[in-house]
Image 1 (cartoon, protein in one colour):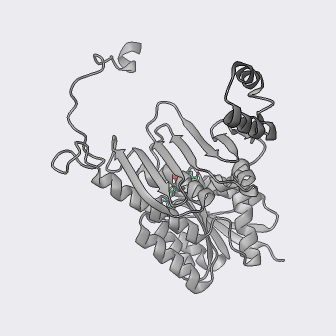
Image 2 (tube, rainbow, N blue to C red):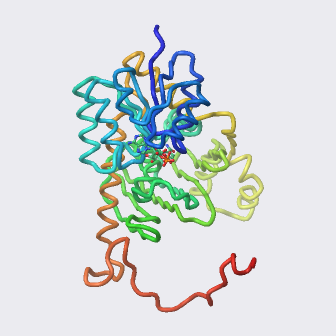
Amino acid sequence: MPRLRMAVIGVGHLGKEHARILSSFSDVELIGVADVNLEQARMVAARCQTQAYGDFRRLIPLVDAVTIAVPTSLHHAVASEFLRRGISCMVEKPLAATLEEADELLAMAERTGAVLQVGHIERFNPVVLELERHRFQPKFIEGHRLGAFTGRSLDIGVVLDLMIHDLDLVTTLVGSPITSIQALGVSLVGPHEDLAHARLTFANGCLANLSASRVSPKASRRMRFYAPEGYVSIDFQQRKAVFVQPTEAARQFREEILARGLDPARLARLKEGLYGRYLQVREIDMQAVDQLTLELADFVRCVQTGSTPKVSGHQGRDAVALASRILDHIRRHAWDGNAFGAVGPEQLPAALGRFFDELPETGELAA
Ligand SMILES: NC(=O)c1ccc[n+]([C@@H]2O[C@H](COP(=O)([O-])OP(=O)(O)OC[C@H]3O[C@@H](n4cnc5c(N)ncnc54)[C@H](O)[C@@H]3O)[C@@H](O)[C@H]2O)c1
């Protein structure tokens, strides 16, 4: 099979990693990288032994497929130039900044037969892959995706920037329609929300509480699942996961208690054997896996074989649709319980006081 002729459009923080990985694939010929910051394009091109372009349109006649890692507000403008000509695209998450744009990209890919994949990288997380292999019915999910302020992706809010990862994960793993949404958000540094919380109820009774922040003093990316099959805790930051599963002895013990009550002797047995006899724990270390390599390899395979990507354009579009519903709720959230007071992410009720006197800035202290 001939090597796939590819390019990366936008080689900033993430796109330069796309270029590095694609240049190492034996079945890919990295034709070039494009960035409006030509100096950046040249630096990445030199490192990956390929050509640098300032205008991505010059790559259109040269490639079979591209990956796109420009700011989200430009995903539609850039991806549509390729998709409408039948050139396959791996578009970084979120697929687009609005649902209308996401729908248009999807329709273009369907019309031309181009492969459209979306960069929801957590789907290639080994723990998520492991969860997908099991019959598993999550009934309560808690997700925290708290990042430090990076100054990037300010063209969108934290729902489209970070929470979108968890929206895609929970909808994939729960596999049931969402029946109700509650959400609120706060804007601290710009025109979009920087902190957000959403509570999703699914038709099958599952409840998901998701929090996201991009102005957190401490980064933390965790998700916990409670299910009849057991409990799973994933630490995306530390790249570790814990699975806890009740044993057959636990099920029998519970029936015994329901029938005969929890007397002191049974309580002692429970305390002694809770972890071990009744609940068993398996820890998974994810250090060895590079998710971006798996994601890009999946895209290359799909373009070469015509198969559907693990994260299809449809799923990327559905994640944007859910994010849009959450954003609608955030914009309408009435902080005082009525629409006559503060409403939405850019307003909060006036503060009643201060927690403590203002501290001097670190710079002043150091001086
Ligand atoms: N999957 C993930 O976990 C993940 C992580 C980070 C970012 N992202 C996504 O990747 C995208 C890029 O994010 P980033 O953090 O790398 O941003 P970035 O600002 O570091 O990089 C964007 C690059 O695109 C270039 N660019 C802008 N307009 C262009 C154009 N018209 N043509 C070519 N290049 C152009 C910029 O000069 C810049 O170098 C965003 O959509 C973001 O949401 C995904």
